Length: 218
Image (tube, rainbow, N blue to C red):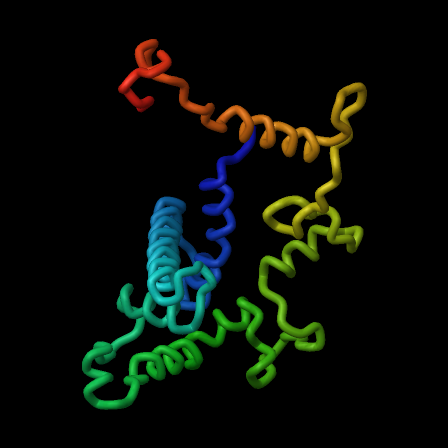
C-alpha cells in the first residue's frame, strides 16, 4: 500500500512538531493532540508559502523568493509586528525595521536554543554540553538518514523526495522508426503542428467560382 503525498508530508512534519514540544518543556502528548498540531503547522506553512509566492509574483513577476517577499509574507500572517505601512515609510523617509528586529530577537533568544540545536544551528553559538560540533551543522533529518544508511552511500535515497534527483537516462525503442522517446515526442509535435495548419480557404459557393461573377470570395 503506497502512502499519499499528504500522508508522507504529515509524517515528515511529525518529528519537528515533537521536537518543538520537547524544547518547550512537554514530555508527552496524545496522538489526537499531535495530529491537530501537525495539521495546524501544515496549514500555517502553506499559508506562509502561498503568501510569499503571491508577493514574489507581484514584486518581480517570478517565483524566485527574496528576503522582501518572505518579510511581507511574515507580516501577512502576523509574525512580524509592529510595522508601519509602505505609505507611512515613504512619508517618514526610512524603513521600519522594528518588527523584523523583534522577530530576530525572538528567534535567537534563549527560549529557542533547544529548537536551534535540533535544527542544526549550533555552529554559530557557544558549545552546548554533550554536542559534538566537529561535524558542522546537521539537521535531524540528515542525521536520521545517515543513521539508517548503513552503507554510507547516498544512492539509497536517490530518485526520491529524500534524496537527489535521479539522472535521466534515454529509453531506447527497438524495431521502430525512432530510436528513443525524445525522438518520438519531437516527431509527434511536428505532426500535430502540420495537422493544425489551417488550409487555404476555398470559394464559399459555386456562384463565386464562376468566371465574370460580380461576387468576391469571402
